[in-house]
Image (tube, rainbow, N blue to C red; front, side):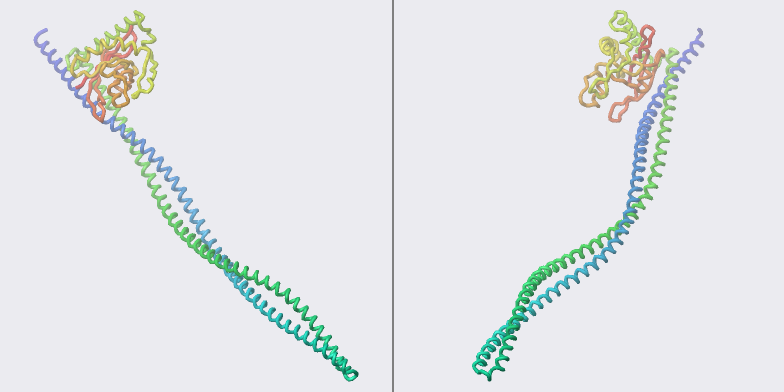
Length: 467
């Protein structure tokens, strides 16, 4: 080849190198933007969930307020009816109380009349006693007159007749006064009982009057309370009506906000997908550039993972040939959770085998370059059975510390992890943001090559290095 051909070849290689370099920088920027979009999309998705919950809460609140407003209106109607009933009852009770007061006054008057009757009976008894005394005296006089008439002989016969009649009259008078006294005694006894009962009834009547005063005050207080309740019920009904109207508007606003957030979430998801496709294009440009044989900053990492992937494939094949592990165990896809681990770890039938054989290959690759962060074998589902020793500590009680220092036996089914374990291309170069915790991220590149065992794809050999 002449110097012009070599010059064109060198120029082409330089152009390809520049394309690869620019594609790498483009991939880094796209990955960074994609990470931010992903974070915002995640927050928007969370906000969409919050808006859904808020909309449901608003709907429940509106339904509850409708019920409250209905109940308030019903209470207003009930309180108004109750107020009218209480007012009518109050008038009836007041009339009854007036009647009771009249009865009390009547009982008091009867007691005084019974007292007057008792006095009158006492006076009559006294007069009867005087009459009885006069009758006895008259009878004694009649007896004396009869004796004197008898002494007078014929001359005293007419006087004797008068004396006999006077005696008969006095006897009848004595008999009548005896009956009167007996009747008066019975009347006096009955009057005394009436007086005692009248006094007791009067005392009860006074207590009733005092009680009716209390009842009247209670009825007035109840009426006032019902009136106030009716007024408050009216205010409650008015306020619940206003709240009901505002809740209707709030539900509409929340629905609009929720729809807007959901639209934003869908737009972010579409943007994320588009950025992922754009990132894939930039990674493809880097792969094509590397396929030309032009040396780039990533060439030594790509070649290292290709050699290591081939070594792992041969190592697995030799173990199968020796019977050290069965093919069904090596390609086991049953991931058994390890109890009480956080983040969750899993074991498979090949995990103990890879723990024995892989460190000899993956540990030395950490010294390839100071930028190398890790080197692992990963299966198509993102499962890493064996990690570098510095990331394979036993788990403790702090999940954050575990996430950073106990990365073996873990499933990393993110975009980068799944692609590294499932692709079958000669190599794959990816750019991604590594979560360092505390909201901090580091831009990383991930070079991987497929691990093939007796023509069967097992997974990939993956190396992550900082930019």
